[in-house]
Image (cartoon, rainbow, N blue to C red):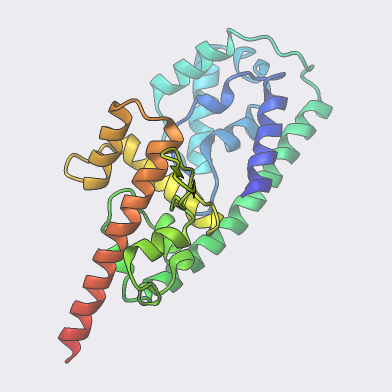
Amino acid sequence: MKLRVSLKNNLIALLDQTFPGVNTLFSSPPRGDGRQKWLDFAAKFWHCQCVCGLTPRAFAERYRKWCKNAGYNYSESKAEDIYAESCGHIGILPKNESTKLLITQAVAQINAIAQGQAVVLREMKRLAAMLPEYPAVLSMKGVGEILGPQLIAEIGDVYRFERKQSLVAFAGLDAPPFQSGKFESTNRKISKKGSPHLRKALFQVMSALLQTSPAEDPVFHFLDRKRAEGKHYYVYMNAASGKFLRIYYARVKAYLNSLESESY
């Protein structure tokens, strides 16, 4: 993932010199194989002159054929928007074979990494779906088919934690006591002694909750209340992550207990 992000940032910096803003023209989610529409588009129309050098009708026809061959949906209004966007820029790098090679090779590298990553994610989903707690985890708000297996992999068996506070401490989200004699601090930081990968996954869950704003989710309500109180970003994100883990512990344990009782 780090390598993919790094290569993508380098490509965007390169495209800023040939077709600025091309990475913002499409909002389509990645395909199952990891490919993204804006990347494939940049490989085909790698310079703004590849678009504005044509007439609007000629570009619309070429764009339609490209969408058909690449398996993307075509929209005439989108073709008009792309054409208008390209006409407002001037490429710093020249439109020649050397520039084309730089961009197409960069896109090919990102697509190769994305395809390998998609294979790993599919295997993660397959293995996670075999676990009994998988349905309970995926039923929680903010958790999808990617974050669900990550949470299960990092947390493991919930029965190895005696109580929910133990799971919060395992994630490094607990605030250890800071006192000396009669002094006791009321402004303590989280320990960060737990799994950094789990904390990252929890931050992604919190970000998903902020984006979707599920009305009846208790974690979102807690998160939104702390944010409304004027708490710092990391304060309410860490606090909500801890609440999410406590609910996770209770729900998963109850779900597994119900499965055991049904088996008897």
